Length: 586
Image (tube, rainbow, N blue to C red; front, side):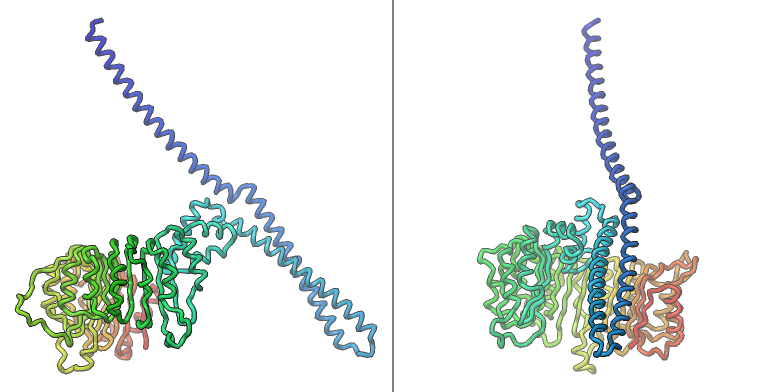
């Protein structure tokens, strides 16, 4: 054999060894997977056997015996009670002149009373034993603790099982001993609490709040403290306020993740002054502050909390100008901003221009009484592009004109526009037309967004203007809410209703918003009686050839039901055939 042949053979063996090692590794992985599948199968088989195996059969037999025993005891108890009643009646008819007979009846009554008590105790004991055995038969009692703990975590506030519930952990501890022990061992269950405060007390009581915090251990904290409307706290010697309760949470400030503070009396300290001077609040992500006024002395305290490095969700509800405080916040990282109180147009645009990461925002822009900017600085017309904004809620007190002219929201899916009625009620003659169709069209064209929800409230929009908006948003619109609580004009006319009535043509449907699945029409309908019902029927009970999506919810409040008698009768019939249509009546 030549050296070249020997080298070839060695290389071949090396390759074979490499292939063999790869196969062994695959076999090892397959073996581990097989073992896991086998364990899962065994666990499932255990559950199946547990439901029908010898142990469960014996448990069911025991339950049947206890049920028989319970029925026997209840029957005996009923008979003894009947004897008791009979002897009581007999004793009432015996004359006082026959003491021997009275003494005998009293003796019998005492024996009967003792028998009733014994049977009652026996019935209680059997019932407790029966309840215990029945609970053992429940499938949830056979779940592993790891799975049960994950189910418990779904009961956290904000989850889809028990939304916003703050008492779920306490309820879990009251079911049984094993649930109590498990609930106490899960700190996440105790990491969220809501406190309501009056000048006399707080709910839950302070000792329970302290215990709650102790059980949360090192988990991030979410808490809300709300002062309820109450009498003047200055007349109480030692009043309970939001500040006095906040003191309990201050030692755990490094764990604050979501904080809501709602004050009723702004004249009292906020409690934020209790935070350490070097408090960083590195865990704080969500902050909701509701207080009528803030003083200049509050600025250092607010600065500590508004400068939290991870704060990205802010709600500011105060008459104090938000512009004085928003300069503290790193608005570049804000994803959610809710300014409940009014701001000027300039503040509105300035804040928006800085919120490059914003995803959802709410503004109230006040134009009436604001002094226009008469400076010599050139007017800024540069576009405000917010590529991540999907929800935009805007309330305006006078007119929509010029407010949307610089905005570009390419990801916008929810648009809500509200008109504040204050100016229109004070000076209805000089009130300008609120809705600016040219402004809205230009905004939608610039943004090129796929709007799914359109919500307009008291905006004094005409039927032609509404049709224009619906035509532009028609391909993607899924939810439409038109609320007209006070405006005189009803924009849902025959033209709008016919345009929304589904067509059976699949090639080129003539109707608008084929994806609509939620519709709310609130005191805004002026269509001919019967047309509204035709439109709802075409989307609520569509025929096979209809191309519209079936709506899931319809809410309607008619301004004058007498003018829509046919609509009302038919809508009630549609709801009877398929529930989900609500006719609100006043």
